Length: 396
Ligand code: 6CS
Image 1 (spheres, rainbow, N blue to C red):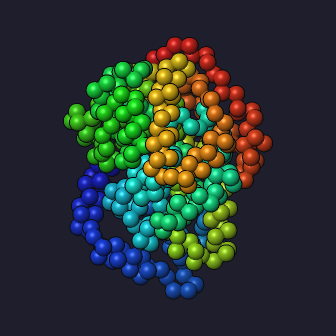
Image 2: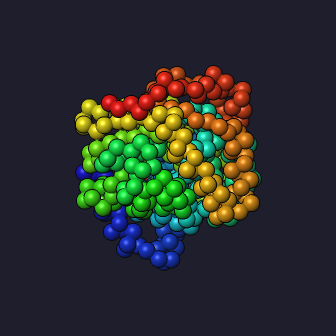
Image 3: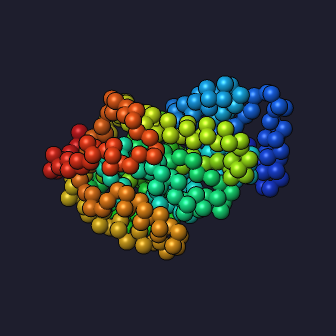
C-alpha cells in the first residue's frame, strides 16, 4: 500500500538524517528556501497523518485561507506523515524551526507533558461540537498555562482539533474491563494512556503509527485505538474483528507553531493566522464528522467486523476506572497542569455519562460559531446528552 511504502522510505531518510547536524541542516535548508523580498513566502506544515485524513483536510483548507488572505504572498506547504520521519521527528523539526507549523497529538506527551490532558478519558462532554468549541474558546485556547506549557518547549499552540471519537478495535469483544485482560493494546507513547489502559485491565504497548498495521497483522498486538477514519485509511480494521464505541475520549491534536518564528511574524500575518484558526473551528467539525461517518460505512461494507456500542452502564464502569488517572496527570505536570484540567472540567461540567451512540452525521455547519463564543451561548441545543436509547450493548 502507498502509505506503507512511504513510511519505509521516511524511516530510511530519518535514520540517514538523525542527530543535531541533521537538525541544523534542516533549519539551514529552510532558511535557504525562504525567498527574497517580494517573492512567495513558504510556511511548512508537518502532519502526523497521511493524505485524506482529518489533519490533511485541516491543513489543506488552512493553506487555502492563508493564500487567500495574503493574496498569494504566503504558500503553506504540507508534509504529510512519512515525509518528515516518525512522529517525534515532526515535533523535533518544528521545535528546531525546520518546519514552522505542525500537528502534535498523543506522542507529543514526551515533548509537552501538559498535552497529555487531551489523552485523559471521560473529561469531555458527549457532544463533539461542543467539545470543539470549548477547546477553542478563549478561556481554554488562550489560557496562559496552556500557552506557557508549549512556549517552554519552543512551541506556540494555535488551535485544538478534535478528530472524532477514539474507537477501540480488538480481536475479541470488549464490554467490560475483564474483557481487556491479557489484551495487548497499542497506545500512543504517553504515560497517561499507559496508565489509563492499565486501569482498564489491558496491557498497553507503544508502537509508531506507521508500524501499527504490521504489529496487528503479525499478532504482536491484539487491539488498537483510533478515530474511525484512521482505522479505515490505514487498513487497521482489516486485521481486527470487533470495533467498540465507548465514547471515552476524542482524538485531539494541537496545531502548533515554532515559537521564535511565530514571535517574528508581522502583526498582519499573526492576525491572519488567528482569523484562519477561528474560521476552521466549525469547518473541521463538519469535516471530521463527515469523514468518520463515511469511513464507517466503508468499513462495514468491506468487512465482517462486528460493531459494539457500549451501554451507559458499561461506560460507567470504565469511567470509574479512569478517574484516578486524573491524579496521575496532576502528579506528572504539577500545578500548571492541574489548573488547566480544572479550567477544562469547569467548562464541560462534570457527571456526563451516557450511552455511546452511532456517530452523528452533521449536515449543517453553524457559521455563527467562533472560538470566542461561550458554549453556553451557542450550544444549549446540543447539550442534551441523555441519549439512553441504547439500554444494552448493540452489535451490528
Ligand atoms: O495513533 C497514532 O499514532 C496516530 N493516529 C492518528 C489518528 N493521528 C496521528 C497519530 O499519531
